Image (cartoon, rainbow, N blue to C red; front, top):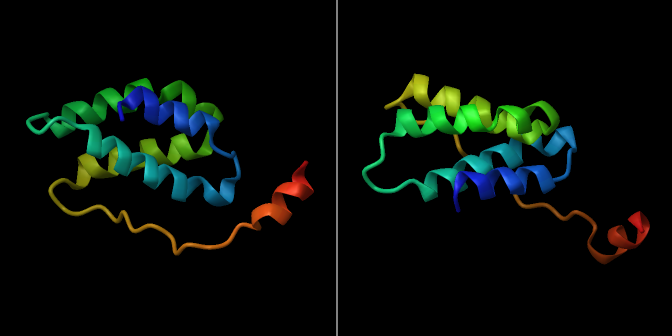
Length: 100
């Protein structure tokens, strides 16, 4: 998934601030997976940071994505905490009916 697709997914994501960190981390992991094998990580991170500026103003998850880019560049080669939250039920069919 390219950076453009990652940003599109963030734009379409819920804007719930409680989920912003989770969605930003998932976007960061997806973006990492798309990097070609011999890509310079700092250069790719700077490009991603610049291209995500407008989206981050409107989408809290994109702002989290940008924060992870900064942290990863500054902490490299130290590991960045990318643990995903524990799975949880979000209401299923009953919840979807309530929102309709």
